[in-house]
Length: 340
Image (cartoon, rainbow, N blue to C red):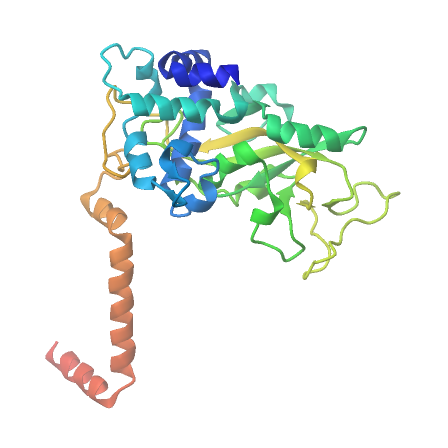
């Protein structure tokens, strides 16, 4: 509580201290927040939500205002040297809140230090050093049981909530083999469920990446899988399974307390960019494609107008179907073909 109070009273020094200790880890943590904030599913994935931007009386979230403030956060390397007070106080306060909320602490790790990642294509590794919420329930469940590693892939905008709340079984939408969180014993299998997405434009780690959670899992009856040991009762079937027994290389975790995220594994889609010293302020938004992603004007047009182009294509499809199914339409098409 004292640390939280200090952070609120002096957000600038708190943020600078955190960034000075581990710039990449702070950058990654902020990028996860931005990815959730940018998501159309923000009401589900942006949890925890900053109290300063919510009205409890009306139960509304001031998302546009939050996006405007977040857009004013510059590249974190420049935060250490900002002596001209160009960063507004509310941006300092938001950045401080994101980096300190819940006493969650992460740090940068070398891939070579994690033996399970030898010969993998992972580009960056971040370790969850401390998360009081998930640590308490996990340690209470493990007791003397065996613990093993497994991997979980998901959309990038889910990982802000995963960092703070852990893997929650009720959030999973796939239930063919039972309700719960699906993990795999193989990294490549889980990576296939993690598409690359944009995080934060100013990121020094990478503006675009995919993420996989490397988790500690307790060898517990609530973890459904093909038998890990032949002398134990079968755990391959969940009570609510519609598809039979859980496939090989997969784990179905039906108890949130027996799984804990240990590492976040990143696959960067581009080389880290050199961030500009000043943020580009975008009203109610946080990211604009840079030339490194999309240098062609035609490609940029398609990127920026996806929704409109899909609607236009759908209209043309309806017109084509209508013409092909009516006699007058067929007559019109034949006349048009004769003219050409």
